[in-house]
Image (cartoon, rainbow, N blue to C red; front, top):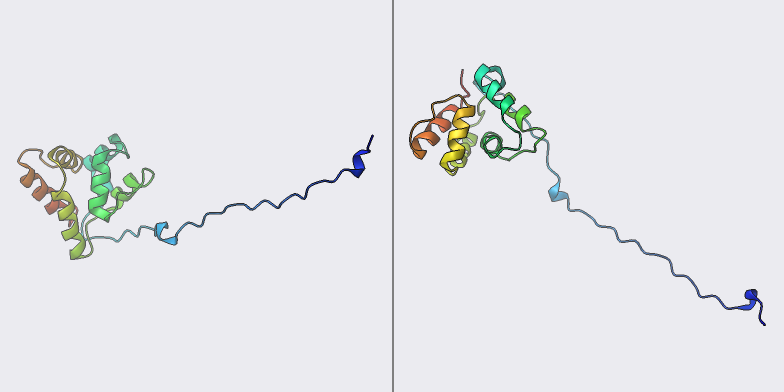
Length: 140
C-alpha cells in the first residue's frame, strides 16, 4: 500500500480572466442646457401641471425632449430638462427640432400640444407648425 505523499500531483494552470473593454464612444457627454430667449417651460403654470401629470417614460415627453435637445433623454432627467427649456439659442437647433416634430405621428403631436397648453385642433401639418412655432422661443 502506497502512502498519499508519494502520489504525483498534476500542475494547476493559472486562470485567465476575460475582461471586456467598452469603447469610449458610448460615453455620453453631459447635456448642457443653454438659456433661450423665452420663458422656461417650468415657469408656465399649465405646462408645469401637465408635465407633473405625465409619465417621464411616455412617448410624447421623450419626443419633446428629442425635439428640444436632440436626444431622447433618460427617465430620470426628461422632466427636469424640459422644465429648464426656454427656447433655442441657435437657429440650426430650431430647424432640427422642426424636422423632428414633422416626423411625429398625429397622436403624439396632439399630446405634445396638450402638454404645451396649445389648441389640439387641426391637421397633422397644422399641429406640427403650431409646435414648431412655439418651441424656438418658448412661450412667454
